[in-house]
Image 1 (cartoon, helix red, strand yellow):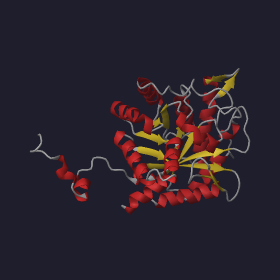
Image 2 (cartoon, rainbow, N blue to C red):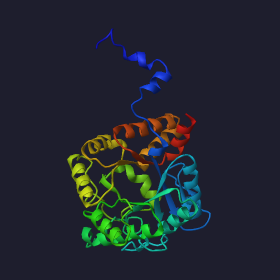
Image 3 (tube, helix red, strand yellow):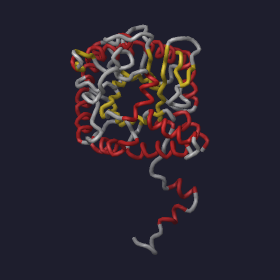
Image 4 (cartoon, rainbow, N blue to C red):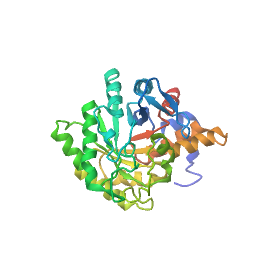
Length: 325
């Protein structure tokens, strides 16, 4: 069909038509809200580089999770900041660790909320890396047991799902085996399978106090130039027992989300990361763009690319916008 017989604008001329032919529909069901838990009481401390985000004590984290659930957001992702750090990241897998406490607080008060936990060591190690360090090198294999112990401690505290973000080779298999051996066969693993070594993580590293104290993370996070490698990483994690495959970051890697969606048959998640959030918030505060409108367009693009689940700091703002429409 060609003009003038075919006129695409016919179906754009009013909102009802546009709604009827809309191909991608963003829903609160697609959203997962990240939360940062810290020790203390009645803490609600703003994160400077992420306007609208906070460090929460566990009771306030639970209250915020409830507010999200009331808006229709089905799940939260918990991150934690320990009181002390050490070379082995022992706070990550301590039974009385901050994430473990936050899990119990949320699940005891609001059992219907899905609690997903970030499984990594970077917030807990004094060197800020996601794995054990030996002679200045990240020791992949020495890290695996600690990651598995962390995942198990989260499951024991009541987590509904664990999400390893470290990018060590083989960690999905170690975690799956540890969970299964301890009768947590039904706990799913959301793998940060294609996690790129990105400059978009800056605000998160301030929020999580997880910047590496030497070097960088290029030996374990992926090169931003690579696409085929993302498919290989996802395929490896699937063979090891991953239930959900995540791409991180989201916006600069829409092509990777689309490629993963086309090549695998598991649910796909995407992490709309701190830098993406901070850029929009900063531009909105300067009056350069409509932050809410841009956020909704961005989240729709991530969904359109193929992500069924979107971890986003815009979760509550987006939910309010969706509910009002």
